[in-house]
Image 1: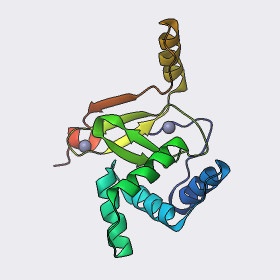
Image 2: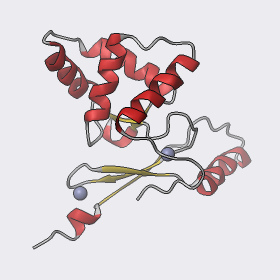
Image 3: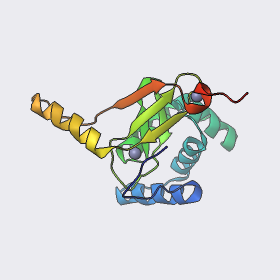
Length: 157
Ligand SMILES: [Zn+2]
Ligand SMILES: [Zn+2]
């Protein structure tokens, strides 16, 4: 479903390496804690809340990790393009292309929560220029489409 024409989408260990490289390029360190939060985030197949991620990190580390510190790290990840916030779900998702900047469009299934992302730079450029024409400085277009994924719309008998 993801339409990427001009760049590849790393996965698994390759995605983690790309995320680490991007964070370090931004002048931040890839600490053990940040690595754990990233691993937990990337391990979710759906957008996860800071609490979900704190829970996963706590279990993995065998000690209580506060949602607050996880939230700060997620904030850092979003700023560095390692993660995206899915606003309508109040949750986070690992950015599939940390080394490449797009205004991602999220398709969020209301039945199962599955969220896929597509990139359509012509469309998002249009949104940005429409905002500019209205005298508004766009910083981050948020385009999320709620509906039903193919699996929920056409369940197998
Ligand atoms: Zn994207
Ligand atoms: Zn679904």
